[in-house]
Length: 333
Image (cartoon, rainbow, N blue to C red; front, side, top):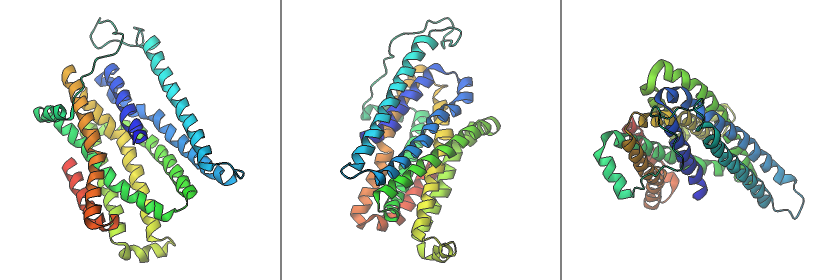
């Protein structure tokens, strides 16, 4: 749980908070889509590393714990990455933000403040109350929650199909390594394309791409599962099983949805904070981080648990999950 939250909540929150603090609106439109380029190079590299470690397990000598070997190698890389992040942040505060030629504070002539900004700590109750007072912030929260719920409804079902298709742990890990690599490559392409989308079509169109992609690919994935018998003759023509086709379709759904999220959804969401006054910006982001983080993926997971307990299995819950997915996307749009 903590490992899942660290990348998606902690690092993302700290990075975007820092970016919002030092970037102007004009700079954000130009550079926000590119901020993720470096991050998504890591997806490509990490996918290859996972693939390599999955293949190395088969060639390890007797007596060597394959999982322990992989875990030690991966945690060493995580530690190295963390040290690089800390060093980069320290260097920026030490040499970049204190240099007038490189950085101009938001208020003309205002000195660069040293030390940490004191951010409001809002409870869940306070966050809900604040969202109720501001329609603008409340709508942003709906966007964040809708993405978290919709992606979770598809992802859990998809991963259950992967386990059926790849029961061997090495095969499963190898497939996920390829998945991470393709996600990184696709996201890098979308990052470059996003600059054209923002420039030619504007914020509104860019914000609609992610729910549109989720709707099209998500319904295709659920359709393959719910109408498996209908698609069986088609899959036999291509020499592939309906299960494997559903796995590949789910992979495409996850790759495209994450690519559009990182390249378009996240930048448009962060741009929406910039025009707000400082107090609303800080409190609104804190409220959305509290409510969105807790009601996004956790809301989708809770819904699935209720359905599985009520209907007996994940497969029996799939039709209801598909209907819930459609409702959430329509509410998002």
